[in-house]
Length: 112
Length: 113
Image (cartoon, rainbow over all chains, first blue to last red; front, side, top):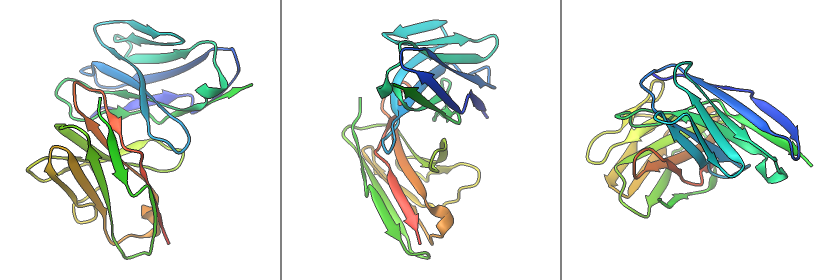
C-alpha cells in the first residue's frame, strides 16, 4: 500500500516568514495529493490539493508543488500569520483507491 | 461539499463497556470512513463503511472490536466494544462525496477509565 512520509514534524517560524512542509510517497500510481489543516480540537479541513497533471497550484498565500518523478510534494505558506498555526497533514491517493493515505503531520507555530 | 455531524463530541466510559459513535451526512455519499487519531498524531484508518455490506477493516482492526453499521448513504455508526484505556483516542468519521476531497466530522474524544 501507499506510504506517505512528512517532514518536519514541528516547525516554528516568525510571523511574515515562509513555511515549507514536505511529503514523499511510495506508490507511483498516486495522482491526488491534498493538504489538510487541523486546528487544536477541530476537524481536519482541506486547504489545497493538486493532481498529477499539474506541477504547481497556488491559492493566495498557499501553494503546493508536485514532483512526480521524485515522488514528493510540498506545501508552501508565505507571509505566515498567527492564525496559520495548526497541524498540517499531507495525503495521497489514486483513482480507484477508496481512502486517503495521510502523512504523520507537521505542527506549525507562527510566532507573532 | 458535505456537512457531517458526529456525536457524541466526547465521552468518558468505564472499561469493559461499549460506546457507539454516530455520523450523519447532509447528502448521500458513496464512501464513508472511520479514523482514529491519538492526540498529536496522524489519522489512522480503521475501516471503510460500505453501504449494504460489511465494513472493510484495515490491518490491526477487527469487526468484533469495532463493529460498523452503514444502513444508508447518509449515516454510519462505529462501536468501540469492550473498551480498555488503550482505546482512549479521538475517533473521526469521514465522507468523500465527490472525486477525492474528504470531509470530516468534528470528532469524538473518548476517554476510558
